[in-house]
View 1 (cartoon, rainbow, N blue to C red):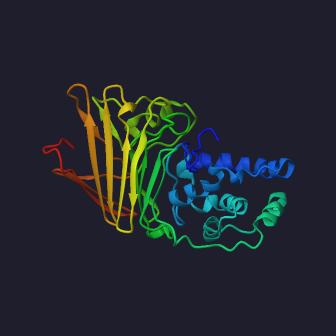
View 2: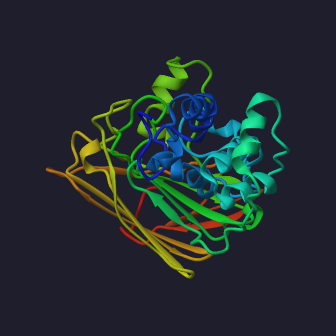
View 3: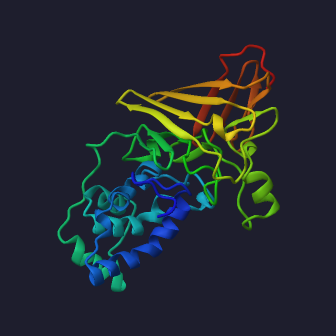
Length: 320
C-alpha cells in the first residue's frame, strides 16, 4: 500500500483505510488461490487490524484523521475487521468484529472466509497495552480502555513521515481528544467536494487542526514534503509518554517538539518546544464543537462526552 506503514498504520485516515482495504481483500484471497501468495504474511496486513482497534475501540462514534472520518464508527468497520481476522487468523480482531456486531459473512467472500477462519475463537485483548504507536505512518494513539470505548479517554497525535498529502492532509503534531467514545477536541471541517474552497482553504490548512501557527502561518498545505516524526513512546498502566517532531513542516520554524504526558485517566500535560530563526508570534489552536468559557490563563469546555479544564502554565499573560 502506498500510504501504509509496515507497522500496519495508514497515513490517509481510517475512512480511506476502510475503503481501500475493503476493495483490496478481493484481490487478497484471489492472489492466494491463483498464485499461492499470502498477503497476510506481509508486515502491513499482519498488523493493520490493530490500527482500527486502537483508533476506534468498541463504542467509538467517530474516526480520526483524514477525509470523511466523521462518517465512521467502530460498528461500521466490523465486517471488514472480520475479514481481516479470517485472513490473519487473529483472535483479537475476531473479538473486535463480534463485539461490534459483525454477523456471519455472506456470499462468495463469506465462503472463502469461513474456510480460512476455521475454528478460530475470539480473544479479548486484555493481554495487550491500551496504547500504541504506528511510527511508519506517524500515528500515536493513547487509550485508557481498549475494550470498552464508551468508557475510554483517548488522545491521538499525528506526525507523519508521509507529510500532508492526499487524504492525509492534517497538520503534523496535531492532536485529538475523545471521551466516552465522543470526539471532544477535533479536527474541523467536513469535506463537501474534494478540492472545494472549504476543503482546500480550510481543511488543508493548519488552522483547522489542534496545532500551532507561526506568525499567522501554518505548515506547507497538502504537501508531502511537510513531514513529521514520532520520536519517543512509552506506555504503562498509569502513564503514557508520546513525542512528535514537526519543525521541518514550517517555512519559518526550525523545531517544534510536542511532548504529551498522559497521566491516566484524567490529566494530560502538553509541553511544546519551539525554535525559530528570529522572533516570532505563536498561536496555539484548540477546536471543539460548541463554545469555550475563557477565564484568565485557561478555558473550560463541557459537552456530551464530559468536561475539560485547560490551563496554560507558561508563558504568563497570554491573549486568549
